[in-house]
Amino acid sequence: MIVELEKVSLKRDGNWILQDLDWKIEKGQNWVLFGLNGSGKTSLLSLLNAYTFPTTGNMCVLGMEFGKTYLAEKLRIQIGFVSSSLQQKFDLGDNAFEVVLSGAFASIGLYETPTDKMRTRAAQLLHDLGCFAYANRRYETLSLGEKQRVLIARALMADPPLLILDEPANGLDFLARESLLESIERISKKPDAPTIIYVTHHIEEILPTFDQTLLLKDGKVFASGSTTDMISSERLSEFFGIPVNVMWNQNRPLLSRVFATNK
Ligand SMILES: Nc1ncnc2c1ncn2[C@@H]1O[C@H](COP(=O)(O)OP(=O)(O)OP(=O)(O)O)[C@@H](O)[C@H]1O
Image (cartoon, rainbow, N blue to C red; front, side, top):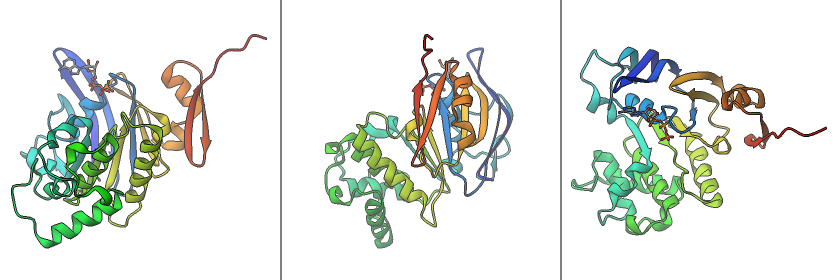
C-alpha cells in the first residue's frame, strides 16, 4: 500500500480543515485529487509529506506509520513533490541540467559532485520530459511550462515510489499544458514509473493514466473511486451543486455548465 488514511482529521485554529478522510492508494494506481479552492487539498498534501500530522485518525505513507516513528525526513526523500510554490526556489543561476541533478541529493542548488550514473540518469529524464533542448539554459530564463518539466525531471532523479504533482499545469497556455500533460502520460507508462497523485481543480487536465479519483469537498471525501465513476455529469452536478455536463472525448473529460432552457 502506497498511502493509507483511516478517519484522518486535521484541526487548525479551532477549525476542522479535514474530516474523517479515508483513502487507500495501491501500487500501480494513479490518482487525481480533485477539489475546489479551499477544499483542503494543500492541507492534505502537507499531511502526506509529513509537514503536518493528523489531529485524529491513522495514517501510513510508503509503509511508514505516522506517530510510530520519526519519519518526516525519511519519508520526504521518498516522495517526489512538484508544486508551483517550489518554482522560484531554484532561481540560483544553475542550468536546467544542474537543477535536475540536484534532485539526486534532495538539495536546492548543486553542492555535491554528481556521479557519471547520475549525469546519465539526468540526461535521460530531460529527454523523457521533453526538455533536453534547453538542458544548458539557466533555469530562471525558462518559461513556466519549461520550469515545470525540469522540476518533474528533478523530482524523478531520486526514483521516488510516489510522485505528487500539485497543480502542475497552473498558469500554462493550452499548448504548454497539453505538451506537459503528454509528458506526464508518457512517464506514467514507463515500467519503473512511480505512483502519481495529480492534484487539480481542472477536470480537463485529467489524463487516461489517472484511473482513480478522489473528490474532496469542504475538507471531506465527497466520493472516491474509478475516474469514470467520479467524473460523470450526475456525480459532478451533485459535487458542484449546479447542473453540469461531462463529455468524454478521446479518453479525456470536458466539463460544461448546463443552463435551464425556457420551454
Ligand atoms: N492554519 C490555518 N488556520 C485556519 N484555517 C486554515 C489554516 N490553513 C488552512 N485553513 C483553511 O482550511 C481550508 C482548506 O485550505 P487549503 O489551503 O488546504 O485548501 P486548498 O484546497 O488547497 O485550496 P486552494 O485550491 O485554493 O489552494 C481553507 O478554508 C483555509 O482557509
